[in-house]
Length: 346
Ligand SMILES: *Cc1c(COP(=O)(O)O)cnc(C)c1O
Ligand code: SF4
View 1 (cartoon, rainbow, N blue to C red):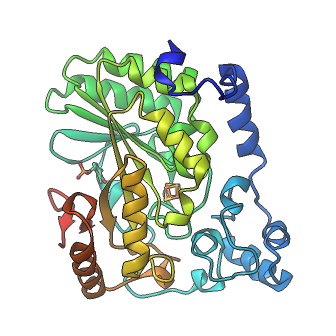
View 2 (view 1 turned 30 degrees about the horizontal axis):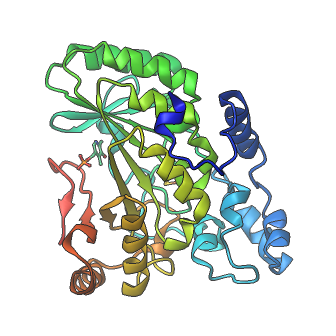
View 3 (view 1 turned 180 degrees about the horizontal axis):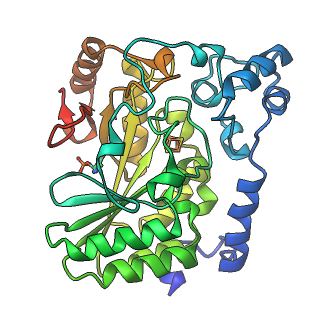
């Protein structure tokens, strides 16, 4: 059965057994780089960079898998992947308008780990953990442990989902929901499938990009077998994130997940450039992934250095529309607390 959903040619080596595949991503996660001095060594950067990074990381320290570091350009402090993960001293600055909970998510909690803002769909927080700490993350100060991203909170969230017939789509989120292993996910998906009014399962995960070995044959098989219509929203901000290891993971996933989307955040110094955004869209399309949202940065404390104005966002989108087919142009959007949907800017 695995052979049927994993496209492979006769010359490929046999796929790793599921146990080995599972051990591999867990090992890579455990071996992710947490020490700025080590990151500097790996990238031939001035060691001077490390100590402000240590200080700035604070409660949201450096975390980045080695496979993601391998896609960065050594010696380049402006590398767009490095900028996303390296703590910078300016994170400590208080900037007007930037707060700990910019989306008022604490108010959108329903019960346990269930967050609902929009009609018909709700988000289940499975864990506070991620394989990478993105410096611009809007949940960088989110109190996961108090917000139901725990086994007990998931249980309460499932009960709430089962009791609300108006919810037809559940979105697995976090943190990163694919940090749960295949067995945990299989159990959870079985519980979701048992809720008759649920029709769709969506997964929001950055793991296929930052830790592509997480895409095990077992994960694909599990999603392929679900009675729910499964979609996946990955998160990449720059084409350089999407190397061949990611391409292989996405090819594997295609066997179980018919709809694959990407969300990106518009980030100063990373992708606030028409060439860069066009290259990202084209690479995604080539990998069978539709660009979905290009988010304006949520004004979370510590991330002000990444902000790009709405006017510049519109300008960039206009440039994209002039050079790409319509299906490759993401929706430029921002979230405003209290609005019934994400606000489309262009
Ligand atoms: C972004 C978000 C969604 C998904 O919105 P779509 O427009 O359906 O992609 C759902 N729930 C919450 C709480 C969100 O923040
Ligand atoms: S992977 Fe997503 S949730 Fe985790 S730190 Fe990055 S942006 Fe935040």
